[in-house]
Image 1 (cartoon, rainbow, N blue to C red):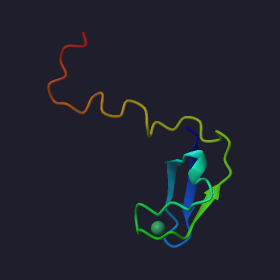
Image 2 (image 1 turned 180 degrees about the vertical axis):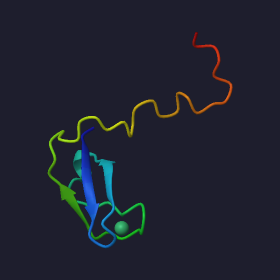
Image 3 (image 1 turned 30 degrees about the vertical axis):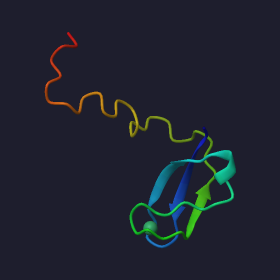
Length: 68
Ligand SMILES: [Zn+2]
């Protein structure tokens, strides 16, 4: 499932959204202000080095002492 980057025209918040192919014509709502006045950003993997979705949930538990 491809991931696209959107930017909100209301509050300027940029966010990533995974869209199904059947949802590409739709505009996702902004997670910050809830507005659907969002635009798709054309960024083809230009944001290298972003660790926003790496290790999400792997080190969230406080009892994680068995990985050694
Ligand atoms: Zn917004």
